[in-house]
Image (tube, rainbow, N blue to C red):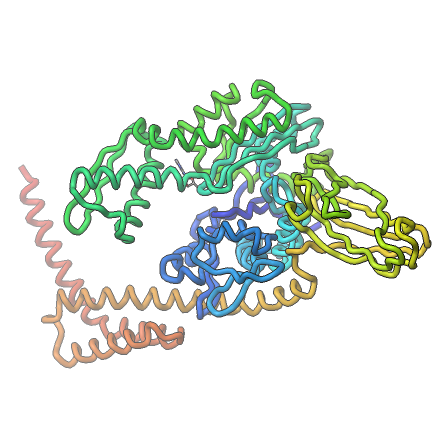
Length: 610
Ligand code: AMP
């Protein structure tokens, strides 16, 4: 059997992990530079597609064609994300069906964007193992609905990965801590990241996980801590320097970065200081951990209400929770840990890196599926009720929320008009009475029913949810014996033909990606060499004969002219040429520097001797 990796496809960062055969422990796979977090950012530049850190660096330069937080759009329609859009600089076409993001003159779907991230992780794993990786377990939030899970699987297909199992993130976090080995128990998973908060209550019994309840806030996280601190600093700057920096984007960006760094330092230390040189003054401020805690207290409190609601949904008092697991970078904040501990009356598990814990758990699940760990089954529940729209637009649930999956349900329906030969079936998900208030998952028609009086046909509708939480709906007319059966693809899903096209395109872009990377590397190298040469000319122009100086300046101009063009080879060639022509200058400068260094050493030695 080929290897299966575990992938945490996150809103902000994504990771890939595997279980080490020798130690039996899950490990994350770093990239060539030793970084394990791949920013879930994709930039569509004219030169090609960038992903991860290089894409993140385009966020300021190309806000309209650099996509981040695409997880918020997965498997959703325009109406679903209308509210969300005010947080984003890129535009989404107000069309029916799947969300399409306009980037750099074309439209991409969220699964295509996620596929770029998945492909980068797949390649990272392939580089690590020296073999093709074709199968993965991918994690999703426990509350992801059918379309969102399906979209995640589609992203895998586009990236050339068979997503053999979709696992809920809280379940994965529990697996990473080995909680599947508990004979029985109830686990609370508190997940506070940069921009989202999730709380899940799971029950584990003999290796079976069941999600009892989930809750959270999709716009609450460490970024809000940063914002609170920035506001406080702005007030302090106004009071002490009489300056209002809130309208200065550059100063605000600097403040935001400094605030985040200070916040992180205050997780380890009791006090920290920041010094920020602005144009007219230098701002210096010492910050105590207590001061930060006062600022973020209401935000931390805001995570506790969803915790209480989840407990109420699960029908359990906090005192019955056996284990508490922390996930997400913001759970490193000591006050967060304290409040969580107070609420549940338990010290939370925090030994594992909270950024890695979900990916590590996905790797454990992958190992179970690959046969490396036996006697394990994982069960989750449906996050929302699933049903059909019936007469008068009423939503009639076939599978109530919180039903353990895999599961199925069957119900009989009939026609409301005499001689009706076609029935419209509208599959909906949600807890509201009326179908129009629920989310529309799929619509399809059952045709070819023999004309009969209203109420006579017997239409059997079957809902099946597999272990991935993905729904299939079948409909059959029973009375005539003439059966028809239809399988549903979600309203916001991709058709097979779309996926096939996207797979092809992704190969085309993969080639463009390599070109884009080479071009960027060439430009970086050109910048470095030009900076060095300019500095050398400032320091040692007098060391260069006039003819040589003119040649150097010509080579420098030639490279500067080519630098912004798209021709990688020409940039490299001119960089090499500039390097060669300045070699004699570099040698002379080095000699001069060496002489100066030796001279100063002699002075230093003399001074040091008694
Ligand atoms: P995540 O989305 O899980 O990657 O979490 C990212 C958030 O965690 C960001 O808001 C970070 O500023 C925050 N974070 C990371 N490390 C720390 C730390 N040591 N103390 C406080 N916050 C942190």
